[in-house]
Amino acid sequence: MSRREEICVPGDEILRQREFMRLVREQSIGEIKKYNIQTFGCQMNENDSERLAGMLSEMGYVETENRDESDLIIYNTCCVRENAELKVYGHLGSLKKLKEKKPDMIIAVCGCMMQQPEVVEHIKSTYRHVDLIFGTHNLHKFPELVYNVLRGETPVVDVMDSAGFVVEGMPIRRSNGIKAWVTIMYGCNNFCSYCIVPYVRGRERSRSMEVIYDEVLSLAREGYSEITLLGQNVNSYGLDLPDKPSFADLLRKLDGIDGIKRIRFMTSHPKDLSDDLIDAMRDLKSVCPHLHLPLQAGSTKVLREMNRKYTKEQYIELAERIKSRIPGIALTTDIIVGFPGETEEDFLDTLDVVEKVRFDMAYTFLYSKRAGTPAARRTDQVPEETKKQRFDRLIELQNRISREINEALKGTVQEILVEGPSKTNASILSGRTSTNKIVNFRGSDDLTGKYVRVKISDVQTWSLEGVII
Ligand code: 5AD
Ligand code: SF4
Image (cartoon, rainbow, N blue to C red):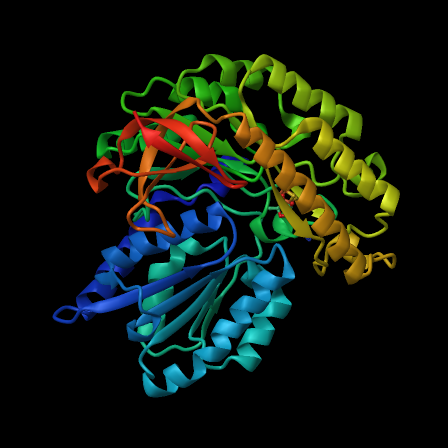
């Protein structure tokens, strides 16, 4: 058997799971069963939740926003930083009373946290009201696991220790009717020394170009005009496929699909970003001029200890090359402050890169110790107080830059994909530019899902305001 055959879940297993979906659906004929999914973490987790929702719909369940009235609650967890884990424990604790009142309610936990054996043990011993625990590698077995819980087998615990699989042919129920997310690869091979993702998501596995193409084609037919391709490191897409297509090849294949006006993607690793990809971004009409390119740290010493495989100078040079070849491109980034051993001088290097590159936006994180990663074993952890002070200084600088970049957009006309009423004010519409900036403006609800031209009249640090022209 080839490695490819080994990692693809065979069609008869998918049929088996479809049979379990039918069995569960038959059990609930005549009653309306409700589910509620709470998702933590990244967009890939959101996409996994859309798969769970797809399976639940096939099993006859309908979605409810109200956790307390649901028959099945799922927590799809994240373990990238400690605070995401603490939130999940808080939620699980608060469900104990509800489960006493509604003993038939099914409480399930899944996702990245469950790939850590000590977490599973902790949940089994502390939160005895949890009925179902499963991990990231066996999401497709969810129908069978629900069936087993309904038969009275509880708790059902099924976590696979595996390098991971590629699953095709399972249902999906998308949460957004305007923008769609398409996972193009799973897992990560990079082992950055602070990061737990490679341990819980397994090795890199790419979906084939053909299935991705077909998925995007059917999204276009359903009326989606914007898609975001997802992977922990999309730049190494295809390396594990038989004819080794590159990520740029995939973009070239997807560009020009009738109806798809915007293609976005995340995340890119600076060490793997090729000139071919930069050219593809510049030349392909549907690929948006926005790149999320995590810096993580500015000091070459810290970058080496993080196992990032680029230097401060290489990152700056790459960012300059991208900006000069794709004028008007927006660059966003991720930055960690307080990695073990980070000195004031190292931190000043981070501020220096931020000043020089001038990111449109940065997601900033306090370093969080993750058990099992090399960085967690270091004895030179940075004191919390120092981390927080550096974090505040970084945010102050980035906010100033974001605002300055936005100020320069005043008076320009931008094409916006309207996403609907703004989250904070229902009488205002909100949408995004091709560079992924949020724009708020007045307009009627029926513009949702359409493209409009808006003249930017005012700017904030995180968003723009405008008038339809
Ligand atoms: N502590 C803080 N931030 C982290 N990230 C990953 N691992 C950690 C950690 N242990 C951040 C990185 C990554 C983003 C998704 O989360 O910046 O790009
Ligand atoms: Fe984590 Fe690094 Fe992989 Fe990103 S590239 S998921 S930071 S190990």
